[in-house]
Length: 341
Image 1 (cartoon, rainbow, N blue to C red):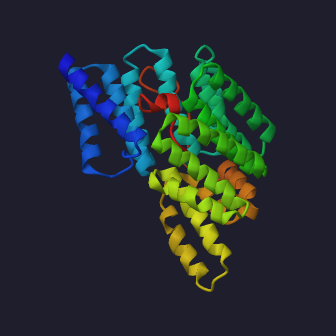
Image 2: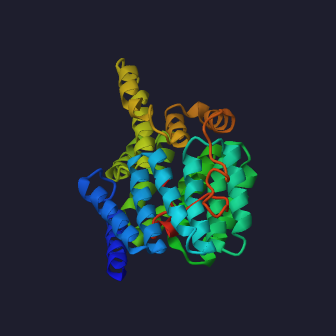
Image 3: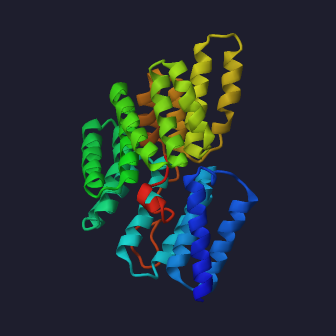
């Protein structure tokens, strides 16, 4: 039992290194086989924590490739494993991963805020997860036009991350702050937040996170019409083609193409935007489309995310067998750093 448990955990550690190096976002047989083997080893060992690590790592991989529906199923398998550990902290962390998926997926912003508030209440004695719930609630609040609430959530989340000295958390908080400020129309503040985040990422040496941060900065630069300055950041964002990077960089390049005014631009835009048609990352897709049509950005996000009736998350649907309500989680390393959105 012990050997298979350790083998499963060793496989997970290797995949964490691939994530840091930007190499895991690749639909290769090697990565998929490695996650399959980690799950098999963990199941054979009977160790719930090893099984949690294996399933959350697989969920992250699937998420980054862009299959949100399957990633949610895998995350719920991780949630089931956590239910056997009697570990409230780990349960809350895992539920926060599902909250991330609600934010990027088809859940209305009002429902994301409600899930985040429930998680925040239950995480009162667990500051990292409380900070995560505040951070994830902020963009949803901004989608609803509640910018003061969104900024308060960001400020409190940032204070927690800095107090705990968790640079991965701080980086994600700053990038979500940039999302809030873009929705509020303060692009200068959005740019400052992105550049602060990239300074942190450069010290950490994480290629995947650098690409994520560069993609967010590229979006801001495109929004203010600084296309030439945006191009290297777009290239950096595309270098690790996770789903949220891909979606936003499609929008950024389409906006630049549209700005040329060429006769063929409309046909080119249709072709460029076609990959967004089938993604389950509804809120991220809407954000990408808003990049192309900036004058409608705030209206698009608020109307799409707050009003459309779609399949959505609820605490009861995310609940594990123990009956506790759910909302979060990720692979062992990204439980501290969060999923890219």
